[in-house]
Length: 304
Ligand SMILES: C[S@@+](CC[C@H](N)C(=O)[O-])C[C@H]1O[C@@H](n2cnc3c(N)ncnc32)[C@H](O)[C@@H]1O
Image 1: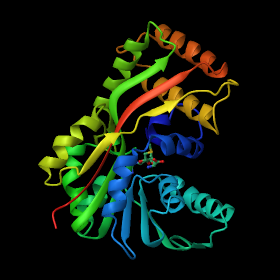
Image 2: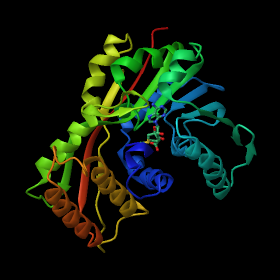
Image 3: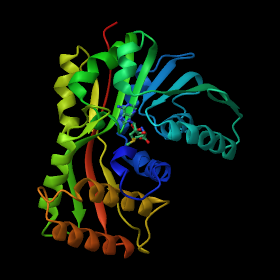
Image 4: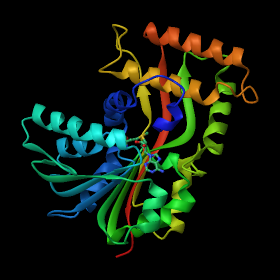
């Protein structure tokens, strides 16, 4: 989901990405992460993260000890988010007692130089020199682009033997509980919206991005060395409250479905959408709503 999905619904996209952090922390596949750690070059690697949003992944990787020195580039088409990311990351670092300093084009966190690049991926790939990154990361992003068109150019950004880690790739299965008689209709309509979405003048999404990556990575000459599921699983605790800011995360997911399907009577009757949303929002307020989204992670390298 990108901010443009949200043009007509009201929620704070930066807060949504911050709220997503704890959901992703649980979801990221540890077997695939272990492969990333094994492949990660020693010393001061150049890491490029595309569709980096607020920068929560670089914070996570510093916190998990997977990166600490070198350069980490956050690329995103949303300039406002990148602006927010400088201060969000600085505050995150300071709260953990890390040295942090804002710089004109990013910031420094400890020994890591974080650089912000404001660019749309398709345009960036058309102009970028190849072989400029040792590690390439995309988290919750590849399901927002046309993977067959973009993947070869993305992999060309890597040096020979360079490493990729493509995570939280949506894979066509969402479960809301308790079950509702309109669930299948709503999700079918939402998946169709994903499959037909156009952003930045290009096809932008596939509701089964995860499973497609197995053969697309192989076809691009960089088959996965590790793959595994990274499902989002969100539920309330025994006291009926959701952890951290995850109630906001769920509210944002419901708003996204609302934004995608409202005004699309050809896909779902407005009364059905309204009934489904009202019941889901009531369950969320009561701490009864459980949300599961199936996703897949991949790690591998391009030929050396
Ligand atoms: C779901 S958010 C994920 C952000 C971040 N990776 C995370 O997991 O918190 C997707 C991000 O990809 C960016 N994005 C989507 N399409 C893009 C494109 N074609 N070029 C560059 N960035 C894009 C959006 O602006 C948004 O910040």
